[in-house]
Length: 443
Image 1 (cartoon, rainbow, N blue to C red):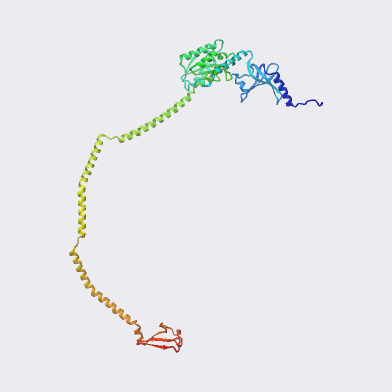
Image 2 (image 1 turned 90 degrees about the vertical axis):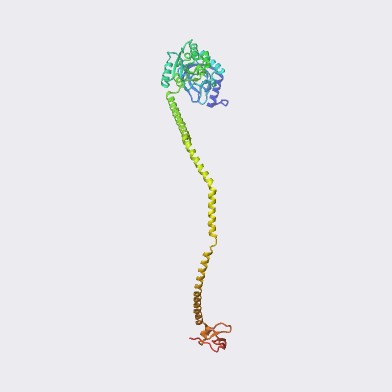
């Protein structure tokens, strides 16, 4: 390998190839058939563009795809304006599509986009100008062809969903050169007659050329100016027309338009039953409260006869109270006088009775005095005899003596004495002092 040779990595090679492709093919138109179409959850479109000899991968990002107004189907042929890019991770080149138009109908698609942009700039697509759909319509108008399958679908759906709703059909062709004008005339007739609550503008599916009557500017302005709310159900779910953007609600199919214009009959019956139940309960509560008020009023209501009887009874009570009030002072004074008289009688002195009690007490005292004296004399004599019997002098008279030591204490035991102790002997007649010569026990 030569020193000046440059060795590229695969990533470097793919990057340089991508730059060459993007620089050489900045914006090109490619014609082909759509296959392997996939709409991702992010809103991006991934598909393959092919013809009889080759195929190439393509991507259309969400912002560009939402502006198309319809969703391509496999097998349809389009002209794509795109830039060439290289997916470096795999080395595959692909087309990044900016816009597309149907092959052979490029002018129609361009006209569609221009009208869409024009009306959007005027505010005909704004949400705040959309009219609310009546919740419970009584009459629904349908603008479509009498021979259209969409009419049968709408009538079948309304018969099944809301048989109570009246339907008025405003016939108009939905395809052809004069269809747009006749659709606008049918719409104006419905507005002038003013006999429906909601209008359904419906048609079955088809190509851009088949649906072109619904991309008419005059029809779009008539829809925007209508005082009657309009639900547009044209084509299939992937088909978009100018009428869809201007209408108050865009339905994906004619059947869906019929379903959006009114709630199911069973749902209404359920709401009515609930409302009747609630109203009945409220009425019962009102009746109960009124009954309670009536009972209280009846309890307070008194007949004239009863009122006279009550007043007569009250008058009699007042008369009795008046009579008692008039005699009460005299009764109170009489009772007070009786009480004072009783107290006076109890407090007055009774000399005769007291004299009798005094004489009786004197007689009792005279009789009791000798008895008391005799009893006291007998008790005194007995005490004297007892005292004489117990007297120490009586004992000393029998030859006994009381021995006391020098301190005057009575000596009771000879062992307490010592030789030479001086003692005092108290005799029956006088006393004498002695000296102890010898002390011994009696035992």
